[in-house]
Image (cartoon, rainbow over all chains, first blue to last red; front, side, top):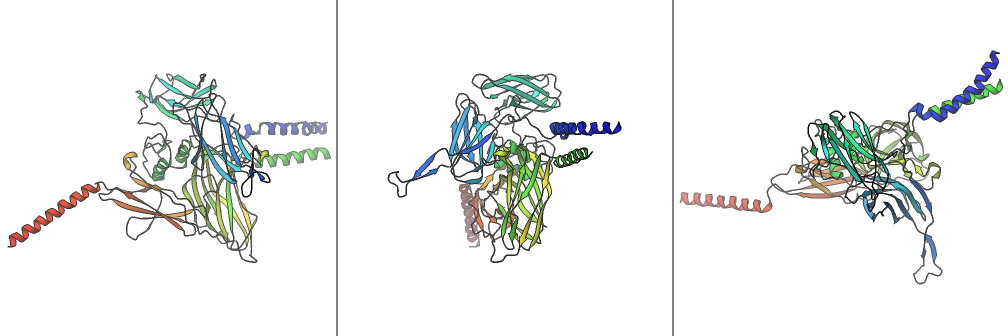
Amino acid sequence: MYSNFFKTIITFLIPGFLVFFFCFSNTIYALPTDPVTETVGVYASVAEVIVVTPGGGNTSGGVAIPKTAVSFSGQAYPYALVTLLKQGEDVATVTANSAGDFNITLEENYNSNALYSLFAVDVNNERSLLLNYPIVVRVGLLTQLSGIRFAPTVVADKSQVRAGDYLMISGYALPRRNLSVTVKGMSNKVFSLISSDKGPYKIVLPLANLPKGDYSVFVNYTGDARTSKLIRFSIGDSNIFYTGVLSGIPGDCNSDKVINLVDFSVLAFWYGKSNPPACVDTNKDKIINLVDFSILAFYWTG
Amino acid sequence: MKHLTKILLISTLLFILYTGKAFAADIAVSMPTAAVVGGTFEVLISVDSDGTPINSADITLHYDQNMISFSGYKSDGGVMGIWIEVPHEKNGNIYMSGIIPGGASGLYDPKNLQQGGLSAIPLVRLLFTAKASGAAPFSFIKTQILRNDGLGTELPHGEQGGEIKINNAITGNEAMSDKEKPEPFEVTFVPSSNLGETPSMIIFSAYDTGSGIKEYKINRGGSVWMDVQSPYPVSRGILPKTITIRAFDFYGNYTDSSIAISGLLPFAYLLALAIVVLAIFCILIYKMLKYRK
């Protein structure tokens, strides 16, 4: 009887445990499982051939050589300027259509590791975060990267909000999309809205129930892991509005709204030194370390 | 019973195999399986982040300095765009840290469709020269990888070292020789008025495709060259001055770049001041001579 009991346990429970383990192991291990809704696909095909004729002249008797090129397509914001950089240098700029779709194609040579970056500037001149795509460029093929999607641009009206007052958040997104505005800090809140027909969105966030302290706010397409810039603000005794002097970007010590080698060098100067200035100490822990460089890299504009 | 033992055995094996992979992300070294004494080979450090965007890393790699020597790195061999600490050697360890501005999730390769086209992120390609025959292992001493999330959150990851077999050369060797100078570069002066509490400084970053930038030296006039790193604080004096930065690669080739930093007083003022001082001096001499007579 006991032998049958153990037989049943081993036959059913162990396979059952294995099925459970493999299905839910991510939960058990708490592995990072960010919900990424942007699905960038990469594929290569022979798209066009160039006929090369030795010595020129007419094309009869020429050799057909497949063209090597890369192409990037996806969604930004309606009429946004989308710029493509190769190894940090501007190589092409296109304007997205009214739906926010864009496509850039670039003739190339073989490269085992070419670093391409893209950024978009909305019609209000607000810039997206930089997106990087290192690619293996294969000879004779058109390598296509599709499904790229920029997170919405975002602007706040205040760097400090008086307790009980409001914070206005605005920017550009794809037309008629569900957006989430997340406030994180002493207490967290998520607000929802839908972008307008032409892409702009605006929301006034009531912060009445939030305690005084430091917060950050970002916008994303609902369910998308890719977020906009993080805007830092605090809840205090008075309202401080953003002016042209303050950029609100962590690490932008010269307030030029650009994060580049100058800002990196300022951070590098204070690396390992005591009493760093507040603008350099991007996470306000009074230490300049790799975390501050990581935050700077996130906001990099070049 | 035999059947049950089989199930138990397979279950245990599967469990052990699966739990061995505790992290979704990995940092690894990869290299050729073998090299010859006197030859140079590449060691790629790459991160398989499982699609999570990363933007910075701090790495210390250990190698056997009796077997191999560090010969530099390839500037275009990885996505690490800006170095906080360029790869440098000390007591058998290579230290390096840097950022990937904007972050990266992986290397997109259309030939790698099994992985959805995404391969591990190539961070840097280090160059080594083989010195003696035998097995030369590589292992990580420290690895810190941060996510591109605006908060600098750590990416939990595993580490995979590697090993290369070094054989005695039968004929000749494949030693690398870099005879090319680093690319021309610019030195930029950033005045302190733009930077609040940070002093005025010069910033520079050179690029060398052959073996990477090993070090910089500075000359502030005269013949003395001192070690320097970017950024370098420079105070603006009354008089204008010229500063020259020399960028060296790992094979001793160098390129110079100079910057003229204007003084606090413009040249016209200095000229006028010199004329006034000269005039006063002449008057004094004239008065003295007249007094003696």
